[in-house]
Length: 628
Image (tube, rainbow, N blue to C red; front, side, top):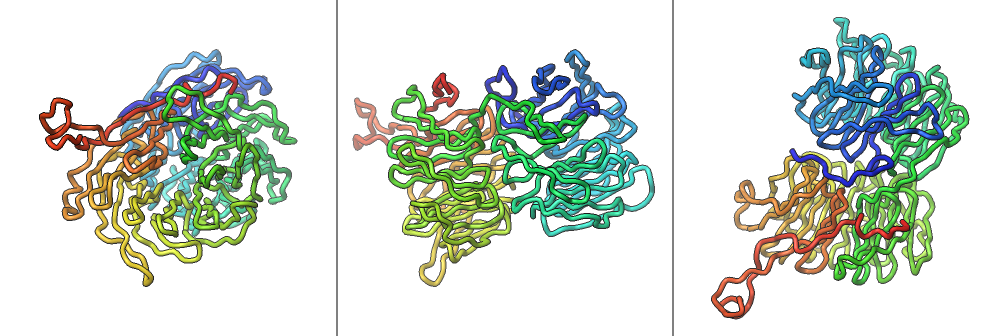
């Protein structure tokens, strides 16, 4: 397993924050990040948080938790499949106490038992495990989920609550003999938190609802927070206030009866995590540090000042490559002049998730649920669409936006007026790609890849887990990348009577989720490219007559310093590949000679195509103007 290799940021993290956790006294805050680090901040003066300590994992860190008995102990959970326990002194001196390393998948969340010795870890494979941190011993497993287990919370009485993407809520009294109490929802659940006195459990659902449940999981109060998914939830110290992070961006404050107190909108906030202590609220961020707010009135006390430029989307406008970034910037690069400074178009404050281009106009889909039109420096924004927009494409005279809610929204490309909206998938529409000849492809977290137009869609195939991306070649070859660690490729057949996929092959190689996919060559012998969270760029030469050969085919073309994020066909022979380490690579076939000509050409004087390789690459941090 490779270790994340990102340039260090002197002011905070080099990538967005995945989790924040206050120590009980509110004087220390741990922030975790996609850059593989945990930073411990002195928040005794919340207007000026001071960095005290930096802790490191090999992969992104998903969660952290302070010990309830020994406040200097901090547990951190990572996608490197380990949980670490650290001793962090008040002056910032830190040391590693133990590593719990026998996990079978990425760890999403950790929580201490009230005794301060046992630790609960929940992971991507749905397991919830109990560990003795004094000895490092695995103690037991307390049930499992059929999909990713996303969050764990432990009450003061020792009741362990776990929630997951399967919609299951499970409560186990670990020191009692009673069977776990469960409740199941149709919506995925990603956040949960016990009230300070253990009298109620708050769960945050993908349908935008936060529900308060009794310890026996009877419903007490239901709060419609947002049209978008509710991702995180936390109680105030006195149990009187709930703070909720929702995917439309920002934070929502409610009293215990479900009455809305206030809403904070800030596109820089990543509401994946919130924490409260001592009258303060901390929230994750797409920028390089945590947001600190006053619990009583929502007033901002401090906020990060350093943007992050992780690439999320690519598009081509003329001769320039457009790169949509976490910071809300769209960078314009000249690939023919690799050292030329990037042009910076600041289209939003929060992440740009998707890009589409027509002529000189580009469109950006944002995390705060808008579509931005950028024409000759003039910015036009759509109305809020109710959920983040991770995908865009143009289909004839319609701009199509895919949302986290599974909707396809048709917009007028000139005015961004909403022309219609329909639910097309049972989960987030992660990728849209226009097809040569009309129509478009879609890929979603409901595990399906579909083809067709806005009004009618046909499922082509299904993966074993969510689908991150889809690509097409000449309107006849389709490839998709999935969190099930596989890539699928097939050919489109059929006509007016309906489109279907034929000759579908499953490609193996990556050890982790496959995030992006691209195609090179011609339809008869295409080359599939894919980028994974394992940092690898993979290539497969497709032989339609030998489907079994794919089990042993494929090779690693290159390795990046972080997971790969997106791809874009540049021309018929090259694909642009971007990684979260800020590296942009141009990939194609290397020239190869096969004959004995004096000029190095083949026997017929023509150079043959060589293996797929990286032809050139640049780093975004080296191209940013100093003023940015």
